[in-house]
Image 1 (cartoon, rainbow, N blue to C red):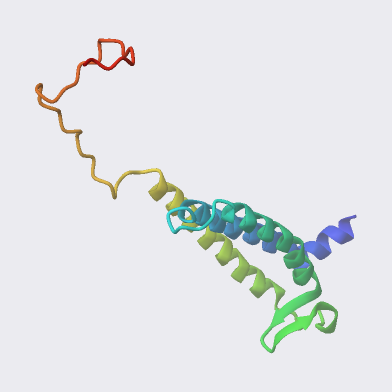
Image 2: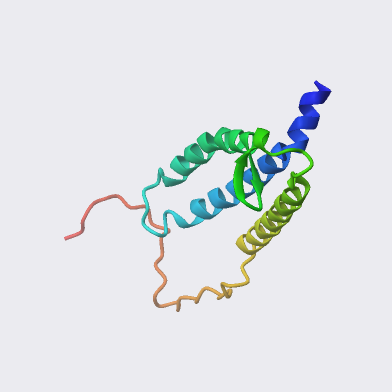
Length: 143
């Protein structure tokens, strides 16, 4: 079991999973906020959640099977551990995670503050325009 854990760690599977989840959560939040105002159907956020969820295992499998090298993507077993740049790739993924967390915090902060919408007091109606509703409506029309 320890061997599997060390191999998952060496291949940056955990980092890819965390980066994927953070970016996916941010994408879902943005789609959830902007789908309806842009005229998209109400099922759009659910569709994106299903697509992102279905692609998660694919991303993990690709990160297990391939390694990013200066020459491009290569199968993991074709790259020797001495020539592997997995630590450098791991630092790049760490930067993606940090950027995703920062964007998520900024998006959350901006979304829950009304800094961009000035607060305007509701105008008061003059007494002559106020309608008295003390009388129950009987539905009868007076002639």
